[in-house]
Every structure is written in structure tokens, then in C-alpha cells.
Amino acid sequence: MSPLLTVENLRVRSGDRLLASLDSLQVDRGECAAIVGESGSGKTTTLNAMLGLTDGLTVSGRIAVGGVDVVGADERALGRIRGSKVALISQSPQDSLNPTMRLGTLLRRVLARHGVRGAEARERTGEALGSVLLDPALLRRYPHQVSGGQAQRFAIATAVALRADVILADEPTSALDVTVQAAVLGLLTRLREDHGIALVFVSHDLAVVSGIADQVVVMRDGRVVESGPAAGVLSRPSAAYTRELLDAVPAIGEGPC
Amino acid sequence: MLSAENLTVRYGRTTVVHDVTFELPESSGGVAVIGESGSGKTTIARALLGLVDPAHGRVLFRGADIARLNRAGRARYRSQVQPVFQDGSEALDPRMRVGASIDEALRVRRRSPGAPAPSAADLLSDVGLDAELADRRPHQLSGGQRQRVIIARALAVDPKLLILDEPTSALDVTVQARILDLLAGLRDERGLSQLLITHNLAIVERLCTTVHVLFAGRIVESGPVRTVLTAPAHPYTMALRDAVPRLGGTREPAGGARERTGDGPGAVGGPGAVGRPDALPAATGCPYRHRCPIAVDRCAEENPPLLPFAEGRTVACHRADRPSGPTGPPDAGQAR
Image (cartoon, rainbow over all chains, first blue to last red; front, side, top):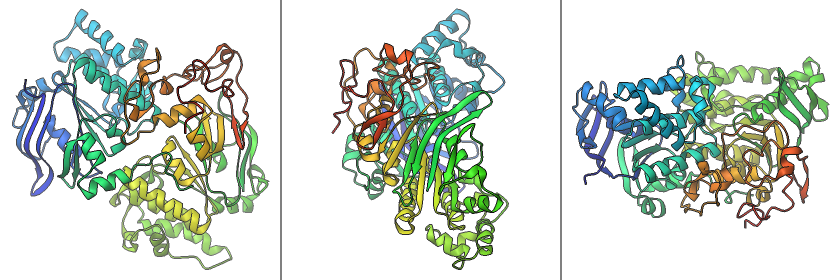
């Protein structure tokens, strides 16, 4: 079976400037690939390219999600891919939810847009909320009435309800408390195991990545400085820059006192 | 130098800080207040800065109640205690060049007697920034540079204490590490005291020797950072410690039939200890009991008081004296 996500010779440019490049990435069912780097490294640009969110940029190379090509696809084709095949989870989901609608309405509309209505929609909603451990009563609330962790769970539930094969997560836990972060990371891991969802996880924090990723791509200034299986990259980094990122991770028990 | 005595703060009918007492001794190694969103930690910072009035209790600076200071006393207090908040972009006037922002703070210093005031360029170099950045406006700087500018401006009035509220939470880990180094340097070289307020236990050890753990507006555990982190006595402290992402973590065995929310790689936290981070504090009994993996009947009836636990430590937990009980967390008490 071919991988759920394939990237080959991707180049994203703004005019002459190279924003992101990625020669090769394959993510299979149930796998997690992490793209790691600092602000400005091109990690979010790479993720956006996987969704076809590249207005005003020049993209070359190939990205295939579930066998469908993203680069060069028209808006209608992209509309079918987004949501049903690939879902995005951003750093602050509350900002991307319409503040004037209850969560239940938002979810119903998204499902309807992908042709899921009535009993089927209700069934999928129940299942999805159960899989992210969210109380169905929250569907009556507006986005600002839920916590950051709950909003993130709702975003993940939406992806589950749409039966997305691939979840693209852009710093999904950076705005959360550490305890809530741990719960959301555990949830993403369980969805990979139970539903075979492939995950692309963008983060600046190698410690977070080490708990979740099978493979790691380290980016800097739009280029890949190192990539490979997570265990190897994190325990025996070959690039000095990766070591720098590893050294920056604060750890309990290594303090100065 | 600074202390909170039975500090209680209410917003309307909601009590957000309950009877909190702690001290920040002169030239101490830094004190941390740790807790999650909604725990009341930022309200404590605001009360210490005199920005919100306590409903009960008081804040003492060198023995004087800050609510009773006269104008001059209040001005002196404000110059000696400086805040550094999370998001530097909101703390700086977007229209002013950063050099002018720092100069504005320096004018206060120049009016008061004492050693000659430094220049804005001196302060920028003290925080590791190029003096040329003085001509930039805040939006032309990176997040790390802005946070350094905020620290430089705080230093302009020659403070004795910095109140740091999540000073690095909005930054990349590499930038965070450099800002923590800068703060540790200021503490060691200038004897600048620091009160660190954060949700992340991992950064506490870099700057502090004493930690107070806050849950639902109450201190639930206090003590030396090293012993509290290696052998937490309160289940909430354990949850905070286990939630810190670690490099090279391995999967830990799941803790029996506990809530699955916390399941996941050991690297991102032991399963049972994290429990249900979204659960609201309980209104009666121990506020932590809805999340607590070791709660017993008594926890629903009685809110445990903060009592001595070991040398220099206090904890508010009915189960604290027998942390390895039959249903206790796997590594409670005996960790390390």
C-alpha cells in the first residue's frame, strides 16, 4: 500500500526567496512525522503546502495525500481533499472557529459540507466526541466558553468525524499548560493507534516531539538540516544545529542548584 | 524582602486567591509560583505589584504594607519591584522606538539621587542586544529580542526584584534557554531577586531555589525546588512534573483502570498522574479531588490544610503522609 502522505522535491518560493524545501517524506498509516525548527525555519510553510495553502507562492515538486496530488490542484479538488482526507489543527483553534456559532452548529456545518448529514452526522459526532473524551454538553457552548484544551480536543474531534486520514498539526500544544499538553499528545497517539491516522506534527520543541514522532525532519532557514528515524536523530544527532535544539530543552534534574 | 501574608483576592464573588502566604527573602536564589491557567498565579503577581487590592491579607515590602505606602513610598516601591510579562509585544508602545521606551524609564532614575544612570545603549548591551537596535520599533524585533528589551527597560530603574510572569512561554525553546541564561546571569551578577510565575516546572530549576505550587488559588505544596521536583508530595505536583516533556522518554505502563485522557508516551507524562487536566476544581472538600488518582472519602469532606511535611516543606494533602498507599501513584515519594 502506498503511504498516506508523500512529498518529493518540494520547493516553496516567494519570488526568488526559498521559504521551504523538502526532498523526501513519506508518512504511512498510523505514523507520525515531526517537522522541527525555530520561527522562520519554513516548517509551517511546508505544512501549509501539504494543504495547498500557498496563495502568492511558487510551489514545485510533488505532494500526494491519499494518492491525490495537491501541488497544482484547483480549488475544487483541494476543497474535497481538505477535511475529508487531511485536516489541520492549529496552535490556537479558538481563533479559527466562528465565534458567533455554537460548537455543535460548527461541527454540523462542516460535516454537511462534506455530504454527511442527519443520522450519520449524529452518529459520527457522538463517536468523535467519545474518542477525544469531550462531554457532548460542550456542543452547546460558543468557542470562547471552552478552555484551550477543550478547543483543541474539539478540533481533533472534527478531524475524526470527517474520517480524515492525515492530521496536520501546527504547534498544537504550544499554547497549552503542560498537563493539558500531555493529555492532547496522548490523545493524538491513541488516534494513530486506533484509527490509523497519519500525523504530521510541527513543533519547535524536540522534547515534545521525542514523545510522539517516528521520524523527525529538522529545518532551518527553509532547508532540511537533518532527517531520519526519531530515535537516531534525537540520540545521535549528526547536525550541530540539532544538538543546539536538544541542548535548549529544559529538563528537570539538571538545574544549577 | 517581599512577602504575601494571608493574601486573598476576589473578583466579584469569585475568590481567585485563597489565603496565600509566602516570603521572598533578601538575596534569595529566586522563588517560583507554579500553577496552570486559572490557578490565580497572575492575580498573585498583580497583587504583589499593587495592581489589585487584596480582600484580606497584605503584601509587605521590607516590612511595610504596600497598601499603606504614601505617594513617595509607592513610587519607590514601583522602582524597586519591576514586572516582566509573557508577551513583550504588548508591553511596549508600538509607536516608540525601543531606545526611547528605555529612556522613558531612565528619566525616573535620573531624577533620583545615587550613582549615575546608565544609557539605553548600556542597558541593551547588558541584556545581550546590539545598541543599534535602539532605533527599531517593537514589531521590527523578534520575540526573543522584544523580551530582552522588556528586561532592559525593567533594569532601567535599578530594581531589586523582578516579578516574571511566564517570561518565556511565548518563545521558541532555543530562545527560551537564552533568556533563562540572561535572567540567571542577572541574579548571580547583580544579586537581583526574582519571583518566577509559570506553568512549566522544567524552567523553575534554572532560576529558583524555592517553589510554591498553586492549585485553584491555594498553595498545595511548598519547599526547596530540588526536593519538591525529585520527590513531590502532592499528587498535583506529581502531575505537573510528569507532564513535562522529556527527551528520550519511553512508554510507561498504564496505571490500571485510570482515566484514559492522560494515556500516552511516558515521555509526555505518566498516565495516571496527569489524570483529567480539564476537570474543574471541586467546590467542597479538597479542590484537587476530581483529578486526583489517590483521593479517598475524606477528601470529599474536608479541604486539607497546608501542614509541615518534611524539612522546609509543607503540603496540603490528606494522603501526603502515606504516599505509597495501595492505590498510590507508582513512584510517589520514592522517586530517586
